[in-house]
Image (tube, rainbow, N blue to C red; front, side, top):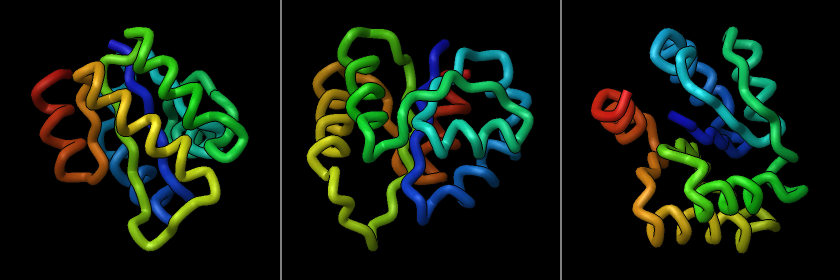
Length: 119
């Protein structure tokens, strides 16, 4: 399976903890992540194909992968306290996951449930 992972700056540590906890399950899959998130995954011992950072088009690239059927599951840890300048890109990723019926986890509880069900 191909798993897309994205974490806004305020949620990178939460994603690091989650990815470390599930390293064995994630390691056997094709991971793709936005720039900073890919670096976090590397620090956890995982390998992910790095897209650009979110504000530089990485969120839109992840949305494209969802729209073209190249992503089976998306983890997007969002910081509800932050309204990023590229909110339209974030909205596109969320909308396309809904349109294309791709599981999208936006918090740890949902990510755990989807991970258990799919992987």
